[in-house]
Length: 217
Length: 351
View 1 (cartoon, rainbow over the protein chains, first blue to last red):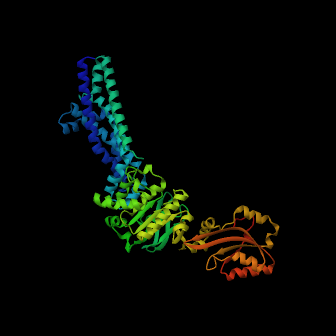
View 2 (cartoon, each protein chain N blue to C red):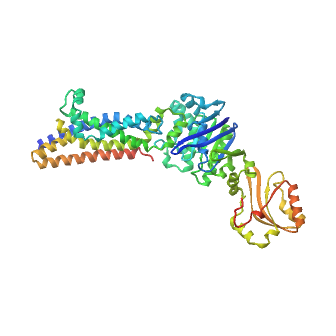
View 3 (cartoon, each protein chain N blue to C red):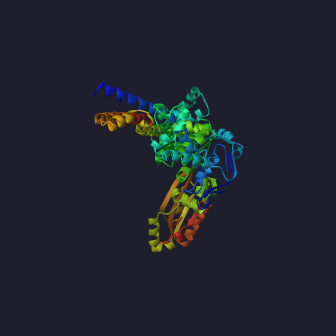
């Protein structure tokens, strides 16, 4: 393997790391609270508000049903507003984040739903406020599930980030398409896929290990 | 300590509203262990949740320690709930917290300092016998140990009332007994008022000072446990009590008696041993003094709330005059006698 190829792959990996890390981080920062709100406002939730729940659910579903490649192009004006440009790695972070938020929200919602209702009832019987129920009961009890959800999200984002080449975002996927596919360099394609496999494996087993560490069920 | 006034609770169901509680009124005195028994669906679970307003009654008022909880706003209600501890059938411990942190939770919610929490939790773990398990997680504990954690947690905020929601229903009989003994011990030491709901009459017999029997959202009978056990008024109560105190004739025995053509000529009596003469050797005296043959078919002698209580089914063979004399003799000892000959028919079960 030539040093040029290694350098290329390294840069691509770095770009992928930035795209996935930043969008995953910001996605979690918005997606986790959104998932909590979805649970709390659901029918029978401790802050039941069905109209709000329906509205949020609709937005989440709409965002999730838009194919990522279309989403990326559709939000270009917004991207320009946020990062000042519609081209490059940072510009790719914006649509990736927008895709990550509803994805994480649904996975967090599912994880929170697994918390037995009896625990919430017990906390209410102790005189816990809704905020305390979220911070002391719901989130800590669902943490293993949330971590598992975030792991899935990161792996999906790695896949999505391959499309970031369409807006000049770079990253491993972009290298694979441009060098491997368009320039008929199968060894580059192979190398990219190999790096991606190792990367995804790493993320997944790190996530699994964290879940095991945190779960006391 | 607790007063429920005309509580009605309706739930919106698929086909109209369902009445889970219908005009229930109860008074529970301070320091008392009050049992509520009923089959599943009788409304007892809703009833106990009305005491700390986990369920808000549709009508009626809930007065705990002199305050009507139904009138309180959310923050005041949360504060009031800290005076009411609760334990659950499935323990409801946080799986992500160890034993110490589970017991610490209500104190954390109240904003206590780490030092204050430690000073409170450690004696509580001592009290429930789990001092050596502070670092374990709930998944590593047995059912009985989990409920002990539940009890310690419920006591952390020094409540005046302890609500037990089927607290022993998920435990084996031996563990049940230990947990009930613990609850009783805590009541005595901390002068708690305890309300427990259960579908097991054995639990009520073991621990309750008074008991209410529920059916279809109503309290159909209530009174001192001894009285309800020895003189059940309602058919449902009778069937609850029957297995517990040997009230019912075993079906096989009933068949045997029915098959005996002579049985109609003998007395078949159920004698209830209560009152001042419950301890006396009545059967022996009866047999010796009146010279009749008494065949003890079935019986059970027990203690309810520290008072002796027995049920005995005997067949008495003798002349008409002897049998009448025997019944008079039993009447003078204030023992209740019930004639069972008419109920021993193959087509019905005696209760």
